[in-house]
Length: 442
Ligand code: AMP
Ligand code: GLY
Image (tube, rainbow, N blue to C red; front, side, top):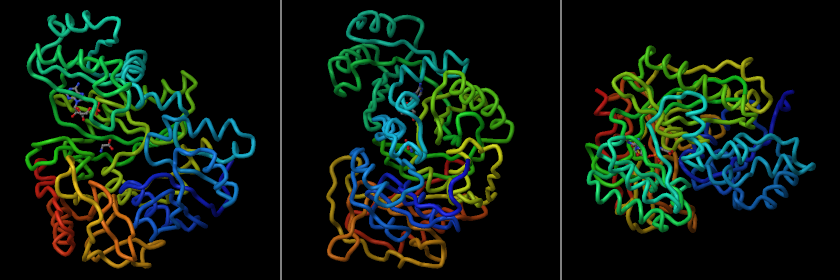
């Protein structure tokens, strides 16, 4: 099976990751029309923004039928965890339209920490030791924290999706026990009705991305994400303040361990358990003294990692989607430039706490038709929009993470220098970015 030679695509999402997908898809000679639902002020340079809510499945159905959509690409996890893939498969009118992403059951690899841990145990995939706590065994959980099976710092994770906030790392035992009780009592709503206590892994993190058709796989460029808001990895956790790819410590030797010990058994496990998985797997890994261990699975691409991963892929995106959707991934060739990509995220003042929206953004590169279907490209950089909107003809801020400025270069300093030079020309009230992206890797 193949997709038609030219295709109409519906891309779900509205962040920097989706602008990067839209930018890459728009470069394909196989694209007929691209719709982004709902998109942002940047994605409209690559296709048509559709005023649709990705969680309103009946509305998605109407849209794909009305617009002769051949393929649906899902950016964020929520529609996947809510079962968008199953919704399509269960409806005879739209079941022939492939959805890039896993089924609701397979999406539990991200949607439930316990499901993911149990999956890793079944398939012998290296990860931190864990213990699951619910209302029924809170006392046992507190005793586990006090036992010699774990040591400080204590890692407590809400089982369900908690918008990236559901992980607590605590040094003090009494405080960890109190937080465990608070989580079970609903600190993160239903997401923390169940809590996974984990062994603390010390090391440096790397994000590994895998495309799979459920049988075979391709490892995409890896990336390192900068999660803390402050320079030197200080301050609160954010969605991500920047990223670089490739990652120098992810040597061929390390990546071979990742492939044989983690990627292979993950894809084999998906196949053996009969999980419907045609999409991307994002494996958050800790490099523990040269040995990779899984911190988490996500069932989608990362943000801002996508903004450095896709610019390094030089082969056709629609061909890759075709391989994923029609189980012909092993016939496809993935080409990657050896150049370094770096992205620096410009955020609204106050983020990840309270921040204001609606600030006009100046100095954005004009949309260039030169690259593919058009993107905000300067001589040096690609300016991906994350939280932006169009208001009375002006681009304004509309989120915490506003722009992700990506550049390619022969080294990390060369790539980041280009992004910082581009950011010099961009302004909005309260703009903040970390000035040290990539510096820890030199
Ligand atoms: P997660 O939502 O599972 O990705 O956790 C969020 C962040 O918490 C990760 O990116 C790590 O930086 C950290 N983290 C999670 N689990 C562990 C662990 N077992 N040991 C050390 N750090 C962890
Ligand atoms: N950058 C981390 C994530 O997308 O979850």
